[in-house]
Length: 91
Image (cartoon, rainbow, N blue to C red):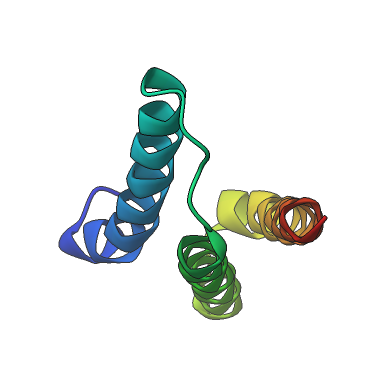
């Protein structure tokens, strides 16, 4: 899936993750406390949830057997990961 649509879907997620990496790296490099990442984490979570919804929509409208086989597990793993990571951010 190397299309303009996939870039449009994945780009916001990649941008938010890049922001998190830069913030973490800067804090480590300059030995300073990390800023509050709640806002960035909320954006990442929102984009990740959107990605899962798109995957589920693709699954519902596709005749691709491989997609039908693999997408439910990918969506389920993504939801579990997002939920687990969100809880660890709140701790």
